[in-house]
Length: 187
Image (cartoon, rainbow, N blue to C red; front, side, top):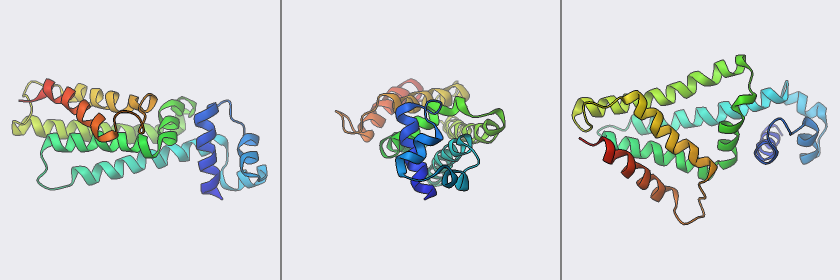
């Protein structure tokens, strides 16, 4: 029931927004009582927090799998991370939308649990870039910190416009993004 309630909430938050979705909206969408909601969640914010944690934890897990593959070139790792982000938007578009759009509705206490995970994700991209710089695969004069933000900006904002059933699939969009990024940073 908790999973079903979470899935319905994600769709409602995506469609109506977190602030505009009431607990009544959530429970009525699956035909349960508010008591059922409060059995699983302390508050609507706790539900939002659970959605955020599930999304970022999955991204971190997938990123770690990509980075820990032995013998992979920096450019290939970066491509795989961008592709993974686009694929997550394809397969979990509603969760991605809620994650990026509704973070503003988390209290400072809850943000203190989410922001370090986002920073960790970005930091790992920065580490990949620094490895590429050190190995000579990327230009020596790059600012890996700024480039990591740029990569995430390009990939993450696509939740707003990317249509997985549109003209380009996530692989093709990742190719375009990486072409744009790498032609500016290749050694």
